[in-house]
Figure 1 (cartoon, rainbow, N blue to C red):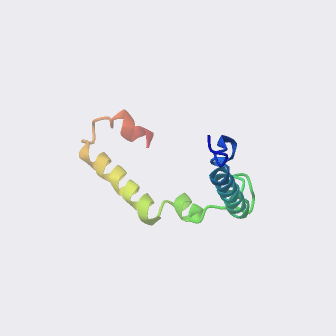
Figure 2 (figure 1 turned 135 degrees about the vertical axis):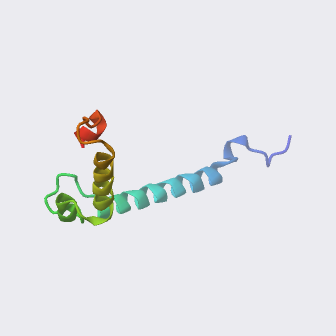
Amino acid sequence: MSAAYDPNKQGWGFASVVVLLTGGLLFTAYSIHDRTYTHPRDPMTTQVYSERDAVGGGEHGGAAAEHKEGAAAEHKEGEAAPAAAAKH
């Protein structure tokens, strides 16, 4: 047998690189989370378009309003609207 072969020393260098890389990734994820996370009940956090959405205007609200008007217009005056349209 050769004296240079030692099975206890194989792979420890690569394992240490993997451990250091994992530690760096964990630190990066924690620092990003710490800088950007806000609790959902934080009073300083408000939705950007909450006032516009409450009024019913805007890009998405206007399309929903047009859809409701179109669905109501399809029914005759004496008929009841379907349950799905009545919920909205």
